[in-house]
Image (cartoon, rainbow, N blue to C red):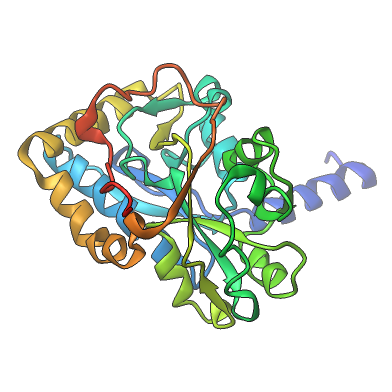
Length: 295
C-alpha cells in the first residue's frame, strides 16, 4: 500500500482545512446577480441602487434574481473581484477613466449626477466653519476627509484641496469628530440618511456651501459579461422612457433634495479631469438640474 510522505500529507490536510474555510459556492449561479454586501448597519446605502437594478431587470423581462456577496466589501475590493469575474456580477460606483478601462459601464447615471453635488458634514461644535467660504481659494485652508480609493479623492486634490484619507468608510465619521480633518463632503442624496446613523450623532450638515463637479454613478460589469450589461442597459432605457426610473428616483430623494435647499447655497465649481469622454452629458434628461441660486 502506498504511504503518503509526511510533508505531503501535511500539505494535503492543510489544503482540506483551507477549503473548508472558503465560503460556499453559490447554487444556480446562472440565475443570480451577485452584488457587494454592505457592512452590517450600512445596508441602507444600497437601497436605491438595488431598487433601480431590480426595476431594470423587470423592464428587460429578465428572471435574474439579486443576491448579496457572502462577505461585505469595501469599494476597491469589490471592483477588483468584479474585474476578475470572481463571485460578483455587478458593482455600482462613481465612474472614472481608470474604472472604465477596467470594467464595462452602463452609461446611465443612476444618481442623475448628484454624487457630484456635495454638502459638507461637520462636527456640531464647528457648524459655522464654512460660513465665510465663497470661492475655491477660501476652501483651500480646510482639509477634507475621503476614502483612499474614491474618485472624489483625486478630484479634490486635482483642484488644490487638501485631503485626508482612510481605507474604511465608517472610520471617516469618527475621524471627523476627532477633527483629524475639517469637513467630510457627502452627496446631497446620501448625506441625510448618513446623519440618521448613530455614528453621526455629533455631526451636522453645513448650511452654506455646495461643491459641484461633473460626476456619474453607473452600474459596472465584468468585461467577460457583456450580455448582462446589455440586459441592464435595455431595462434602464425602458424605465427612463416610461417614467418609472424618474418616479423611483423621486420616491427616494425628493424630500432630501428639498431639505438640502441647494438654491440658497454658495456653489463652488470644481473640475473633474478624470471624467471619461464618453460620459453622456449631452443627454439632458439623464441629469439633475438645480434651481438657480437666490440673489
